[in-house]
Length: 327
Image 1 (cartoon, rainbow, N blue to C red):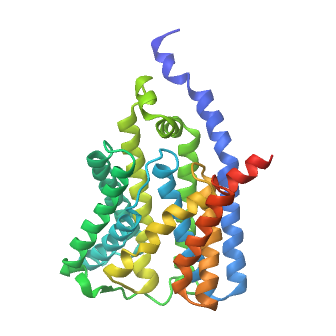
Image 2 (cartoon, helix red, strand yellow):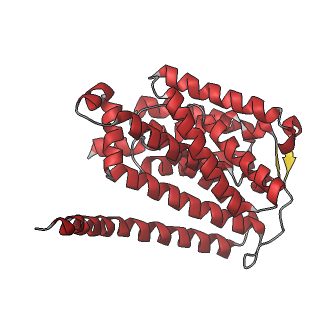
């Protein structure tokens, strides 16, 4: 066999891998289309905004799970990465006039670089020390934003958004569709990570990092990839936030709710799986929206706290783990 033929050897495996992923992507797109068509048939703008709220948490929980679920590194800085994405979109809008989609792309780049830099500086720490370092990152970013007058500083910043974007019936519908596509993309990325060598390497790190290093797993490189992906997806989740609310201040951007929900949703759904964060985000996001409409949004963290207590006591491996144990 000649050397020239060697690069063609992996082709059957690549084709088989593509066929293995195809049903997932077709199913995900099909579900997304059904959800969008159902909400359009209902014709209520609140449905779009509630759906956006839930889908935002799907992206955030999925992003957290890449580092926290697969690799076992608990990240308390979710609010910082989300806010970085939101303020990147605001800064780009003020500097160039570019709208939502370029803002999301810029947020992904900034989030990935921020995650990469943070990972390089903190991933040599383990356990609670790494978690405290990520929490400190969020505090540092909030301090920078509060003193950055270009993006509004402590006063906050306004985004004047159009009433509608053709061919959509309202801007809320457009915003929902953007977040729906981002959620499908985020879950697809997480599933791809899970079933590839990257995911298996991260799981080895979670189970026993020293043993993984001993058998030749490039632990630092894999963790840096995970932090970059995690940071990019968290920033992407935050980029549409100023367009969703029309106004953003540091208190709202760095809300404790984002950090708590980012951890709680994967744990309740089943951390370390691509489907667990989706289940947890849909469940908790729906309950929080119902509480906001019927009682008060002040109950949101109360709901999350009690749900965590219940699941830690009844199903410590989350909903997926509970069902697998009962088989």
